[in-house]
Amino acid sequence: MTRKYYSLETNEAEKKAELTIFGDITSFPWLESDVSSYGLSQRLQGLDVDQIDVHINSYGGEVAEALAIYNTLKRHSASVTTYVDGFACSAATIIFMAGDRRIMSQVGNFLVHPASTYTAGNAEHLRREADNLDAITEQSITAYMQALTKSREELIDLMSQERFLKPSEVLEWGFATEIEDQDDEDDDKATQSVREMVNTKLTNRPYIVNFTMEDEKVSEIVKATVKEMLEEQKKPEPAEHKPEQGNPHKEPTYMERLMNAFK
Image 1 (cartoon, one colour):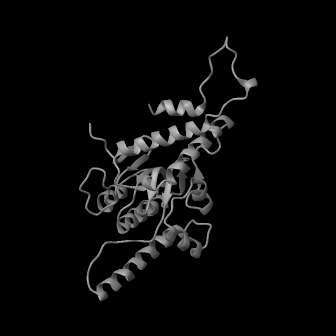
Image 2 (cartoon, helix red, strand yellow):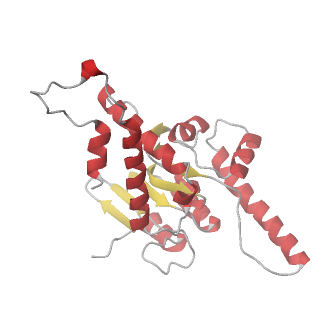
Image 3 (cartoon, rainbow, N blue to C red):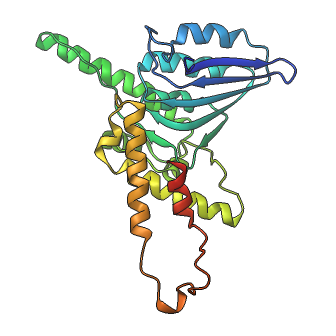
């Protein structure tokens, strides 16, 4: 069964629509996972709903396409909630900003950067391309600044760094309005802190941002990272805390349960 990465489903009874963008944003949607502004905008404009939920897991794509989707969502009369379910990078972050509520996953990844392109030509052509890139980047900045709590200069500096933001930073900057499950009970907060540790380790490794990597390879890296963290957690227990010989059973730690989930 082929996995469907891009879908738009509606619930007429609840007057609600759910848009899933789990692919590249492009004007030439060759693959099932690709998303174009034309096809999407046509469907969004015809929706008679009160609520639109947008789930994003995308490495980005064409800024012009993302801006068109952003404007279509902003103009719609429905309330829009956007979610980062995995990665929101580059142009995908612009679509995320269309939400009235913008919810960042505890283990989501967020990356903004200046517009880039591939080109060739003479000096005049290259200078013109550079000017075009500046204009496109400025449009992205305008979309971000509608909600950010930082200054324009700080945003430009952040974009030039081209680094992944932690969920807490995404919230602090104002890209997100909230972090998913941040108000859960204490035991769940402990769980979320471990997830954050995994996320930090992954985003600090250069090879994890190879966006052409196959799913199987990414799974191997995640598994290896969790295993490494588990080894770090294994420290000799003080003698007084060792289980008695007559009672060898010991409950697995959270890290051990997490590792078992990847087996």
